[in-house]
Image (tube, rainbow, N blue to C red; front, side, top):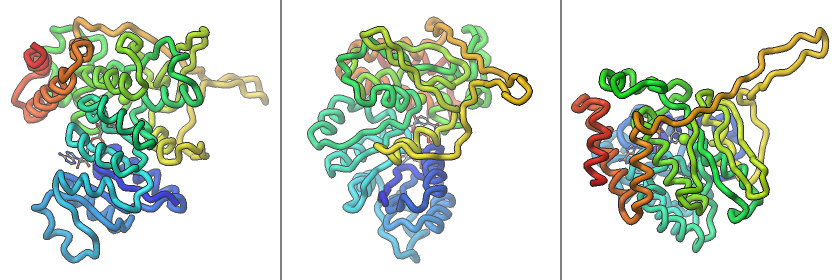
Length: 358
Ligand code: NAD
Ligand code: MG
């Protein structure tokens, strides 16, 4: 039985991880949960999964005082719970750069990590990958594109790879021009066409900054050069990652757009187990009456980098190297927060990113 700590258990990835564990209770035991604000959900999770420890902001301690549970607080506590003695696997489902330090702490404590938090590798990729190697732990990506590439690379040497391609749905504004983007609202930006996610990543997906962060994440995770990583628009979100090998073979990973599939993979890694998530049905002929079901159609398009500057700016930050990606991420977190608070307009996010890079 694997003992699991989930950092950010109340968010979109956190609750989906618990959903997978709920369906496979015999294989996993939750020993730690953390949350930043949604105490009500955390209380329900404690009742159901009975963790040994939690981490919450100190101001909430009163709420849990009657429980026989170890309570950690704030950033320091997050690093402690990420290194909990009995943990076999830490799932990092925190949003933003708050995910950096607990990742480092878990690796130093020699814990395997299933990582959804992309900002950690964007900000401290070199340091984290060095520690992963030194401490010989498994860092398994949950982010669907990286999970796809990780699976295509299983058993291969990265030297055999020519390039990889990350697919991108295009977000809610695919096909828009700059004029259209002038008019979009927060509500429009939060409406992702294929995935249901937390607020920050939804906005990042609309600006395409998300894909930029993913390019930087992939660079570190797979030890690739920036020029070996490409992005293509694939509106169906069914192919998640593509690897071009030097011998001319191209491996692609496809699955339904359900984050529980890469989460399930990461929880059971290195085993591949059976589950009952919706299968991707490419289409087939019914042998009985020869009738044909609908066949899937997969489209690929070029990214409009002129309109969706978020991706172009992320490449620029990655190319400059040093602490540019970290500063780019910091500026983006601030800009998204302002946009979510209704203080700036959609295109102002790009303006703030350009200013940061300059
Ligand atoms: P979310 O906003 O739904 O949840 C975030 C979680 O982190 C919550 O539990 C929250 O309490 C906690 N948190 C927020 N700020 C914190 C802080 N300062 N300190 C400690 N904890 C904090 O986010 P999400 O959509 O689940 O995304 C989490 C991460 O996974 C992000 O980095 C995102 O880019 C990545 N990711 C998400 C998806 C998805 O489908 N949601 C897919 C791929 C990658
Ligand atoms: Mg992704």
